[in-house]
Length: 437
Ligand code: DGY
Image (cartoon, rainbow, N blue to C red):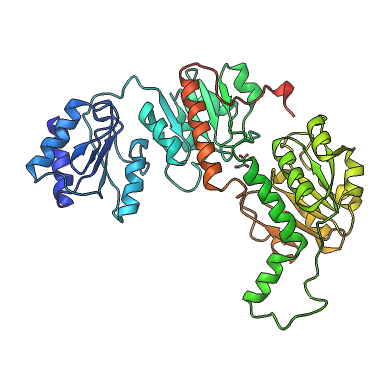
């Protein structure tokens, strides 16, 4: 405790005595949070609290809200241990740099399950993970390099991944046999070798349901933007190229009464179909390995084979998962079967369309326009021909980027992780591969 107190005094002194948040990942220091001088929330450790209190007393007491302090258990190597995530947010809000420093000699880490969180997620989920586990959060904007990821997950019982982390045999080997759960912060899980996880008895969770409407809205937004040439028009206005109102200028396609072809009529595909049917009175065709009788009854949707969908649709929107049968599904052959007035939209996964073939189809008039929220690779290569085409709208995979969706994803991902650590069934487990679509 003396060492701890000494460090605290150093920090408090350097910050003029302001210490609203002291938060450490070590068991002794779990949740000794102070707000306006009063310890709040969590399961406080008396010794930790008294060390903070005593350190504060000796230099005048904690007085305001701004300085997060994180006590590292081991040496600093540029990564932040998780427990100061909320403090980190406080630091940004208060315009103060986060303070991080090593504190050697503390007792060994606790019995709490060790987890790795591959990026900061909304605090509604992250705070629960951090307070209930011995967590390490990757704070950088960019994903952890592979070697770093493999190093960080060693010995973990749970890992919270994003679609940027490849979870495969190598990953499981690096983590070790104690790994119980992988919680993917996404509804899609093509980054995970689910069969291999199941073979090893590792539970895998994902975040379905909470991003359905946001993703459906994005698909319709892209349909409208591409059909009505919105980005191209806005670019011209911004470049000072808008000359006058032109009877023949910027003419696009209507949605009303047209036919939408939906590839993959699951949750998101159905939400798009509803918008199209009830918003623009569109006819709905779909292609899916499974029949969706509810959508057929509700929306008068008709299940057709892939080629019929291609040739009859005015808008084609992709809502299937990425697997070996959908990889490269939209290639030169597929685009050639579509109407020259058709609009292609992909908000699912980039590898479902072949970028070069799409660029050719958009360039030579095989297709009217395209709207993409996903590319292959991500981010798209800045030299991609798609980025030079006026009739192609490319967004940076933002379909689920709404407050409600991301918070919902964080809650489910946290639930999945914490349940899996306790060996309980997950809130949203991924389906086993054989029943997967
Ligand atoms: C997902 O959840 O699979 C999306 O692609 C990202 O939100």
